[in-house]
Amino acid sequence: MDEGCTAVLKPSESAPAAAVAVQKVVEQALDPSAYSIVQGAIPETTALLDEKWDKIFYTGNATVAKIIAKKAAETLTPVTLELGGKNPAIVTKNADVAMTARRLLWSKTVNAGQVCVSQNYTLIDEEVLPSFIAEMKAAINEFYPDGAGASQDYGRIINVRQFQRLKRALDESQGKIVIGGTMDESERFLEPTVVQVSSQDDALLKDETFGPLITLLPFKDLDSAIRTANEVSGTPLGLYPFGTKAETSRILSETRSGGATVNDGFFHASIPTLPFGGVGESGQGSYRGRASFECFTHRRTIVWTPGWMEKLLAVRYPPYVGTDKLKKLKGMSDLKPNFDREGNVRVGLLRYLLTLGGKDTSKGLMRWLLVAFLSIGYRHYSLRSLY
Image (cartoon, rainbow, N blue to C red; front, side, top):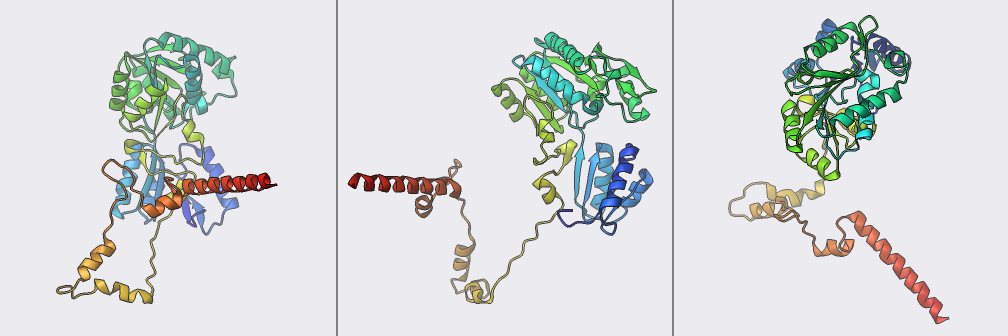
């Protein structure tokens, strides 16, 4: 709306109560001639994709995203895709185990783990695995003293189909349940369940779990952890390294992801002014904050060429042979980089003097203000000394 766009919204049919709430807000608060909402499933979505749009924004899974992107390509319609991902948390032996367990438990139990940016699995140094499991048990007891099933702070799986998907993944896993495992399909309840697996090919790592399944895969050294994370998914939506600054910096430099939070779970996604989005198989484009404005706008470049420039522009008109027009045109249009081969910025004498050696205008202004302050102070002191 801030961009002046009209829009048609299509809520997910998997969350019917939320879809009704969105429709109520749209119809009561917005201009119906500019904003409308369409409810339905595959037939309605297909009908919408048959229309020509200026922009398509989709958040969901990669399977549907490929269908949308393919359809949008037929009319060269730009798309923004915010998808899920097999997001790794990587816990080194130098991490604060108690803090890490609490934070990763929180990020995997918010909305019963049905959050696209929560960690899909946790790679953990085998030296701290036993203590991590113990701290996870303590954190669960702290969060849900009467059990998750009796807690009003713990959610349920959104529908039976998704519950059965999670149960099937758990049944097919070769891992060992070390905490939890209780479930009730009639209530769509699945308690926080910690599973220790031994292979990256385990069923719990094949797809995004999108539920309260906390998968632990031990590693011997950081090299193998980084390699496993890149092999499971080279472009997840989120990445969560826990450890020393040197360790987390190395993980960040040797992996890719849509976003990352160091020593916490998806905190970057909770800051509304930061751009949020995926990369590669986790999506394309970003939104939120200024990025949302950029997402739904097109920067149209407009140049006004005044008539008084005609003599200056005469060098671009033929004939060129036998004249120095091309030489002049080349001098007017050729651009040279303002940095050398080592990346050092070249600063001209005039700019150096204007900025007092500062790297940019703001730093130069601060230096001039400092000089002015010192000059005034010196002058004041000089005048006082005369009397």
